[in-house]
Length: 73
Image (tube, rainbow, N blue to C red; front, side):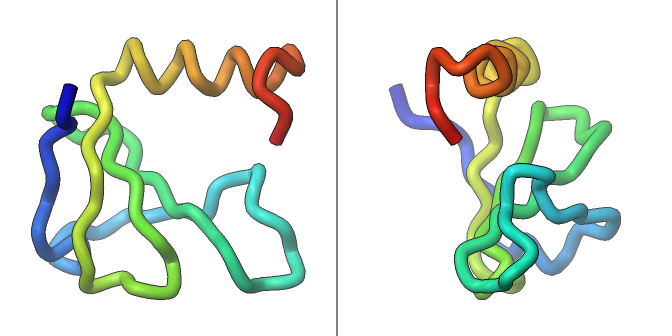
């Protein structure tokens, strides 16, 4: 299954750094809350690049699995 994408993620405002991204910089994920198509996710090192958009339910399931240790962070 291929998730939809947003070709220029910089066109959207309100991005926040994932709480699972470390404070030391480097590899960081940013997510955008309350997007009508789902949960956009982008690489913070490339803010004008593409973002993947995951269905909200799938994203919530993924986050729950990380929190419970089923998918280590």
